[in-house]
Length: 142
Ligand code: 5GP
Ligand code: ZN
Image (cartoon, rainbow, N blue to C red):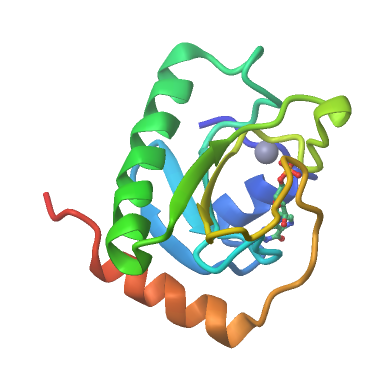
C-alpha cells in the first residue's frame, strides 16, 4: 500500500480524518461524499495513492471498479433512485478536485438538474451518516 502524507483521501484511508465508511477491503475503501450531489452519493477509492486513471496500476483500478459496483448495487437497493451515474474525473480541466483516483457513485433524481460538474455544496452530516448505515445494510455478504 503506497499512501501520500498530504493527500486528503490517503488521510481518510489511514483514519487520520473521519469519514462515513460504507465498505472496506484490503485494497479499497468506499465512503460517503460530504458534499453530495444527491442523497446517497458515495466515493470508491484505492488504498494506493495515484492521481488518476492514467497513472493508477491496473490491479488498483480493477479493485476500485469492483468496489464501485458493489456499493452502487447497495445504493440502488437502498434508495431505488431514478438513475445512477458512475463518474470519474481526471485533471483540473475535468474538475477533478482531489488528486487521488476516485469513482463517484451518484444517484439521480427525476429532473434533478445535475450537470456533469455538479459543484461542491456541504451536506447534512446526520443525514449522510444515516444513509451510510442504510447502504451498508444492503451490501452483499461474502
Ligand atoms: P472530484 O471533484 O475530484 O471529482 O471529487 C472529489 C470529491 O471528494 C468531491 O465530491 C468532494 O465533495 C469529496 N470530498 C472532498 N473532501 C472530502 C472529505 O474530506 N471527505 C469526504 N467524504 N469527501 C470529500
Ligand atoms: Zn492519496
